[in-house]
Amino acid sequence: MIAFLRGTVADLTDGSVVLDVNGVGYEVLVPGQLIDMLEGIGQELKLYTYMQVREDAVTLFGFLTRDDLQMYKMLIGVSGVGPKAGLSILSSLGADDLRFAILADDARKIAKTPGIGAKTAQKIILELKDKLDVEEAFEKKLASEQIRPETSALAGTGAVQDAVEALTALGYGSTEALKAVRQVKATEDMDAEAILREALKRMAF
Image (cartoon, one colour):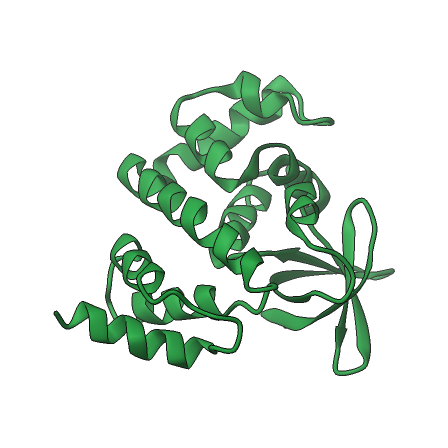
């Protein structure tokens, strides 16, 4: 199982990225919103992946954050929502908007996704609403709004994202971790470990 890929963008299409990882090109299907965020060929990028294995094909689906991947896995766990349909929904709404649409019982918004009808949208709400929390949804929205631009600004190295995830793994809340990392003023030559050290210094005060 491939948990994530980190490499250089070698090619881009409307719905996929080819990542050059140590000389091997991996084609990864990604949400349209992620394509819009990329700077182009040659950019370094880390994608969290889901691998679909069938008799006739092995397909990789990639996401910028673990939260996006988690939301995707929840989606495809709904009966009637396959891997490509799940990707289409996240391309149309994004993880945050989808989460709020589910919590608000807004089936119409979900059904605006091409190929997703009202019945499927209602089924998504029915099966996932009890798995989501309003307070957590706001916290994750705050996290995505603050981390995504910085990740892009660092040419997709993932250092900022990795530092935040390391702090949350240590037991800090995601919002608290984000605030600490944002105070570091990370530069392109700083790796995740360097950012983490500086963030921990600030959290000690």
